[in-house]
Image 1: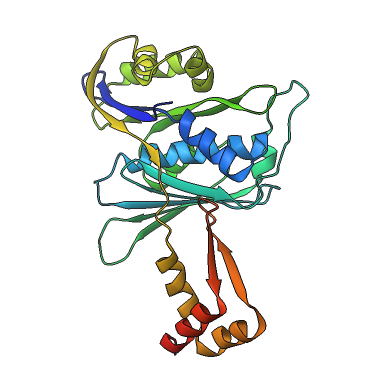
Image 2: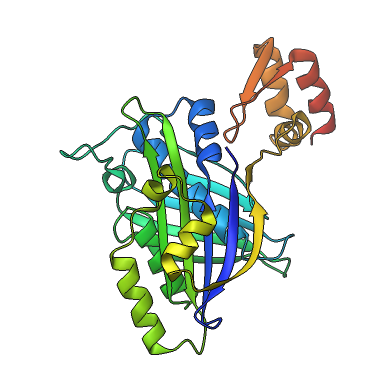
Length: 288
């Protein structure tokens, strides 16, 4: 499944729209971490949002999103860079649903706040937070853009799973109103969004990212670009070696004296790295 994003202008460049298909990304994450349905839906929505947001910045800017809710899913952590994403949630084994069978993402996420940290290569990273107002995440990110970035926006996010819990569609959109957009155009857009199908339903019905934009704008838009999205983890044994060295010489020697080997899992891709007693002892020699 191709993961990609389309960017367009609409309403005489008064509105900027991003639409993304992320089915392959979310399917990969679910399988890699053996995730249950509601955890998959929640993490998938945040991964989609991060992929879109990172595509609004320069190619060398980095983005971290933390959804700090008090629900059973725990903290959601996602990193993104130029359309490349990786992420995880504390508890991948959550399955909550409403009486109608719809996944109860709001209860899984709970109350709390969203924190967005952007490394724009300035002196310090830029950090901003906003409350979780619903837990459904699309509404929460809409609120984030209005409160923290002062950009009137609308966010749609969705992950659809079949009765067996398999990911069958995932994607989302971000609509941002630019300065000077006419009031009548905003009103027209608001009315359109009231009747818009959920984005995961549209994708499941065969809509492309461009089709979603056509649906939102009634075909009146200016295509700008298409961008590939992907799930990529940059972990390596060398990175974990640096982390172990930071523990200090004494602690590393204690580990080497008590264990023949240790195994470390990457939270972002579930890859395992093994360190023998000899390797740990050598790292201790490099530590302070």
